[in-house]
Structure formats: C-alpha cells, structure tokens
Image 1 (cartoon, rainbow, N blue to C red):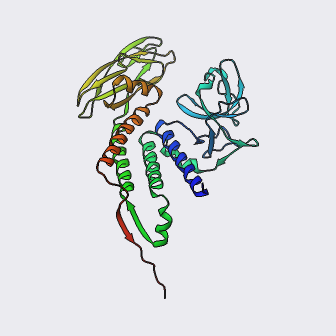
Image 2: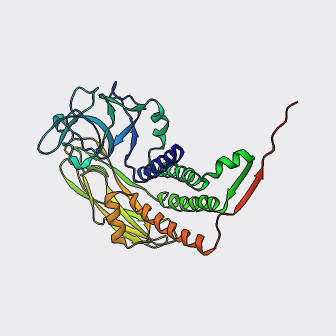
Image 3: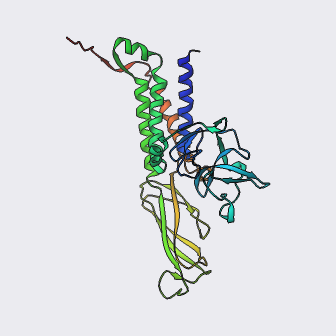
Amino acid sequence: MKIGDVLTLFAVVFLLTSVVGFILDRPILLSYVTSDSMTPTLNKGDIFLINPLSKGKPGDIAVFKMNGHWTVHRIYAETSDGFITKGDNNVATDQQGGRNGVVKKEDVVGTVITVFGTPLKVPYVGSYLQDFSKSTKNLYIAILVIVLGSILLTSGREGARKRKKRVLKLKYKTLYTIISTITMAVFLISIVATWGTIGFNYASTLAGGQKEGWYLPNTEFDRPLTLKSKTIYPMLYILSPRGERITIDKSQCILMGKEKESLIVHVKVPSDTKIYYEQIDVYSYPLMLPPATIKSMWNFSPYLPLMAFTSEMALLLTVVYFVTGSGDEDVIRLRLRKRRYL
C-alpha cells in the first residue's frame, strides 16, 4: 500500500468519525476548548485529540458531559461512585459544595491524548468553530464534510492524470453522490428547523396570589400550554423539560398536519424568591420509523433518529443509482488550456 493510499484511508476514517460526531453532538476523535478553566494546559480555542478508548484515571484530562455541556477537565481523584474533576485554572473542584455530582466512568467519552504530559493541540482554531457548535449548524458542517469525502472517494487515482492532461472531469457517480447528499441535507435541515422550545415565567414571592404568575414559595401549580404542528405531514413530537422543577403530563404525541395538542405542566415553586423561567425542549420527527423506535433512539441522542432516516434515504438512493444503470461515465468534461506568456 502506497503512502498516498494510507493517507486517503486515514482521511476517510477521520471524515466518517467527524460526521458521526457532529450529528450526535458527541466528541469522538477531537474537540475544542470553550473556556479558560484549563489554562495554561489547554487554552480557550485550542483543538485537542481524544482517545475514545480510555475512561481515564487520576491525573488524566477527561472529556465528559456536565450540566448539558461537554467539559474537558482533569481527573483530580477517584471515589467508589466516580471521578472528582477540576480545571487546572480553577481553585475548587467541580463537585465542591455539591455543585455537581461525581463523574461516572460511563459518562466519560475519552481522554485527551498527551505526549510526556503535554496535550497534542492546535491553538486558536476552536474559536472559529465555536459558532457552529449547535443546532442545524452541526448539520451544515457534516454536509460539507460528506461532500468533500464523497469527492475524495470517487475521484480515485485519476486525479493525477487529470492534472497532467489539464482536463477537468466530473463523473456521474460523483455528481450523483453530491446531489444525493444535498437532497438528504435539505431533508434533515427541514426536520431540525421544526425543533424549538416552549417557555413561560413565574415569580416565587411572599406576595403569591396577588397577581397572575405570582406564587408562594414551596407551593405547586399547573400551567396549561399548547403545542402546535407547523408541518403538513404527521410528526412525532417528543417533549423534554429542562430542569427538575417542572413535569409534563405527556412526554410525546403524534400530530397530523396543523393539529394542536394541549399540555399540562406541573411546576414546583422554589423556596428562593425571584423570577423563574422554565423551558420545554420540543423535538419532532417524521414517522419514517415506529414511534417507539424513534423514542428509543432519542433517549440516546436527539440526532440518532436523523442518522436512521439518513440511512433509509441513502439505501433508497443507492438502489435508484443501480437501477438507472449509470456508471463511471463523465457527465462534465472541460479541457483547460495552458496560458502562454510572451
């Protein structure tokens, strides 16, 4: 195997794992730093490599999820329940004062790769990627990576010949792959665009009951909400309350086009007197799979059902490709002329 083939294989593996990581919103081989808590070991904006096979030990820098955010902190100590973690630039551990629970081993997705104790990192690049870290922007990045990967895979060794002959060629399979990728991308983006949140506020106050939305501390109340479908086709809606202060009477429902569903939110008013804002995340999925299957996938990651839908569409488009009987023929062929200088 030539060095070029090895590099191509490495690039393909890296592209595929990057796509999976972006779609699942889960670091796999690399991630970046979003705060100064690990300075000077890891600075804000640094990209670092991850060993996904390691669960870590005291002294290692682990990657794990805490309070809904991916965190990269050093393992400070290990208990029977899990890890105590701490940022190198922080005075206290993450668990001091009961702020957070211990980090369980199953919650660690990997450890930072180091050489003689120094992390392998690329500075500053992560700052440019941070704006693309949420919602549909993850899909845009994944789409770009897929398109680049498809061109890399379908170009083969003819690239060198094309450069020698100064001929620009685009094969049918490359064009079909790009068009198929864009088709799936539009489909996925249209799904994610229907995601959102339902929110409301209220006040915990000793003057509870004197105005609408004012409640006495340590009491409970029910709040009616309405979920509206904005699509014209049936969708499965999955509802996820943020925090432990609220619960809802329905965790999921199926709505036909333009239908509405009434919800009852039960709220436990905190003892601290101030204004609170509660939110319920709403995820919606077309019924391309049984609702129970979609919900099981969602329990692992909201993006996992999208991967299943993509697989279904990819299989269908692959069948169409072979049924049409098209192959390696060139659909675009441009001869580039060399410029002559006097």
